[in-house]
Image 1 (cartoon, helix red, strand yellow):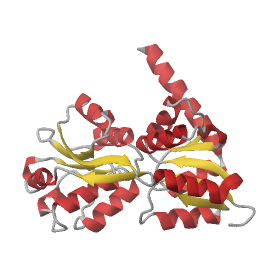
Image 2 (cartoon, helix red, strand yellow):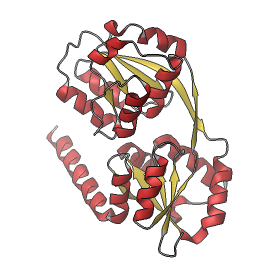
Image 3 (cartoon, rainbow, N blue to C red):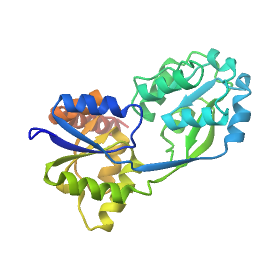
Length: 277
């Protein structure tokens, strides 16, 4: 770490995308430190496997996170996904999820990778879906999934078969990892970056237990739902990345004012819609 680098604590488990995050952030003089925040356990995989064996009963499948793709692969015992799914309307939130489906599910192509959250994907599906809505969309999901996507699709005549396939818990070593990062990087830590509402909740539990306030650092949210989770804890959000990519993260770290102006315009738009109603 050089004296010019600004440390970013990233509350996110290291994954295949971590090298890309680290390399890109370092190019812009940031020092990324990954803190695994969540742990996951699969469940109901036999039920999911049975559903996957019958693609003719579905209009398509929706992946809202890489973990959902992993659950499908695990349920198939890393075997082949029935070929019928490739003919259906399949969707994914974000490029990481899209790419994982391609690499682990026999080149299954998904639409909507440019969306960065469930709300945006729901809008995309409503705007672009050109098939029959008589059959449901299969939605593998976690125990902390919100109703945002389900509500959006239901309001527009879609049927969704939601199957809870994994549980999200706080990482057992979260506290130790945070303490280690604080001890090593200390005053050089400028940003705390969060990728999910559940990550926010787990981190907040730790900081509260240590009587530490996260407000002493600049808090960065990845996506609007993560921003709302921080704000619901009474915390001030420094900036918000529109999508879960390192390019969007770097963009808001370098130009936080753009993020704030975008948020202000969005709130003005929502207020105008409420007034019109």
